[in-house]
Image 1 (spheres, helix red, strand yellow):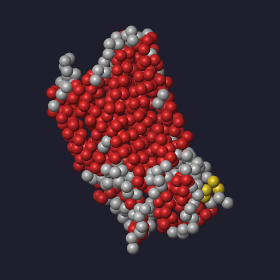
Image 2 (spheres, rainbow, N blue to C red):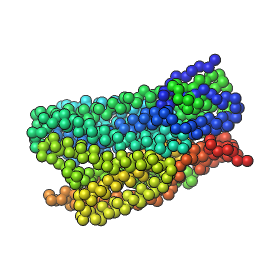
Image 3 (tube, rainbow, N blue to C red):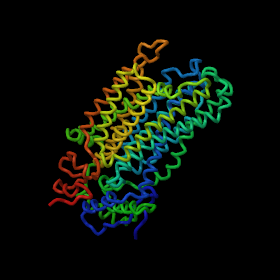
Image 4 (tube, rainbow, N blue to C red):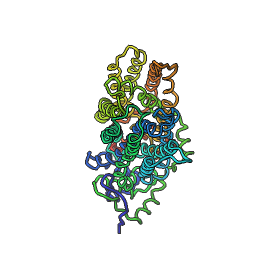
Length: 564
């Protein structure tokens, strides 16, 4: 009698075993994965995108809000009586999230390869929810600092955000149809644009809601009494609202089935993987029905043919110690690092660009905060969001490598123009360059550096490798904010607060130029199955499932016939 297992939902489904009559486990694996690879794009794919994308919406919302958070904390707590945080405090709050993100990306990425995607997915969202809610409720005390508490909770929140990168990428990749896998992963990542916009819109609404308390005060330093209380309520509401989309997606994440590729290639449970595959493409809730006795018998009989080394750090280093394998991981990681140096450094110019469109500063605290939020809404809609969705529309036809290569070339040119012609550009010219840079960031390497690591690595290394690549990117953001950003004030005077900003833009162009060469190390993954991509690696004497090397021709892809 078949026993129905727990779990599964309408976003990530599973099925009855259609291939139980086939004795060869590798052939059963090939046929089962073909069900996913060749499935027509349907509503269950849309639901999967929304569940994974909601996490990225939340991640981006929380990261975007930090610049608004530090402004309002300065207003409320006035650490140097000028209405702004001290520079070290401001920098520490902003860097704390990135530091936590690095830990989460590598840690959750490795654990997802060791214990499985299902066991980890949702835990990172719980951590984000708890840390975000705690941030919104902290306050100073005789023995505590509000800045220190915010830093502590933002590190924990960053760990959760970091975990979302490899998990959402890998799970979407392993459940996606081959034809539209890039678009599905790109759509998940594109939710970042809506997260940034959502944070700006919430700030606009809060500012308008407290207008009567803010409109009579001319500067942050003079914001006391009702104004101070209003700003205190605003930053807590801004941060706290960020948990709403995360809570909505939590159930679906906690109840997903294990990805069939992990079940096949790492857990080596053929019966369960077949059931999961077929249930997923059927669009039904729950996991597939599987006879436990049959599953145990099949697992024992096929273990010799599907034996694969368990994921471990020693096995990982042995695999990437081979030049052919290591250079691809180096290419994905360094491309992401080089990109994020300039991507996060671009914010250095936001005040100049906002000034050019009439949203810089203001006569009162209300106008300062409103212009900051509304101006960011305009910039996000002008460059970031169109770039994300142009990438979604073209990535499965143009290809990942081409988009990344063209993106780095265009960004090199744009940063060179901005750096060397800085003192000759009008405000509107800077606005145009800023929008174009945002466009080519997202319609290029910002999207492709997320997608390629989720596709090109073998199953048992896929999540760890994506986590390392993403962690390298966040190290790039730390370099931008902690090392390069301070250079802009070198030689500052009362008349020119950022005399070295043009040279910083020139430095960013050098990073973009280097990205052209790291892009040459990555493979083109367009319209290739994950199994076919895995055959590009030096697997030693084993195939991707541990079968003898002679059987590799069978495994070149679930939609490819073995060659005779």
